[in-house]
Amino acid sequence: MLRELSEIGMRLARGVERQAETPETASGDLGLAFSRIARAVRQTLALEARLEGEREARVQEERAMRDQQLARATRSSIDRRSKLVRRAVGQAIEADAGEHDFEQLFDDLDERLADREDDDFLDRR
Image (tube, rainbow, N blue to C red; front, side, top):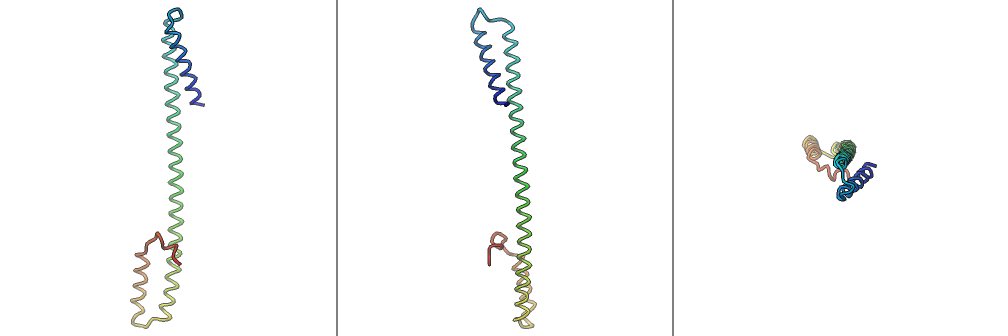
């Protein structure tokens, strides 16, 4: 609607311009009319730009919120997968490792889980 309103204002401004170019219809009131129309058009365009900026800011904010939610969900999935892997590998270590290797294997497991690449950690089977 604001775009349409500014287009109407521009048509009016052009009409005032045409009237001002013909000497028989030109008057001092045309300058005032043009000034008011031009001001209304500028204000309409400024309002349209401000509303568009606010809309874009809302879109960016919503996108950032979705990204944060996705990051939290991914982090939660990675933490669950990490606990599952630690438990399964820990059981294998307890079942098969000798006493002297037991502690070192758990240290290695913890180190590998801490140094994991989260990008593909969820995709590995």
